[in-house]
Image 1 (cartoon, rainbow, N blue to C red):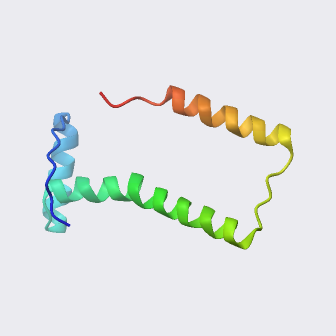
Image 2 (image 1 turned 90 degrees about the vertical axis):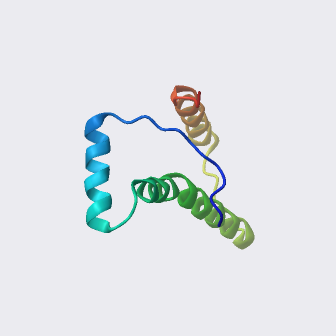
Length: 88
């Protein structure tokens, strides 16, 4: 995939030093390490979750549990999303 989008990221000196050392030992760029971390943390899990959800729907084995438990989970997710830092 072509890299066509640029992101400016500010790190504290310790973070940058640790990333630079890790990049050197792995013979990669700091940018490559950061791209891989983003993929592992945000992109891949989302794809796996969507795939698993689709598999459950297609198998029609989804157990939604009781309403009170489902309601607690919905509220917990809404609160978690509300508390999550937003992108500037």
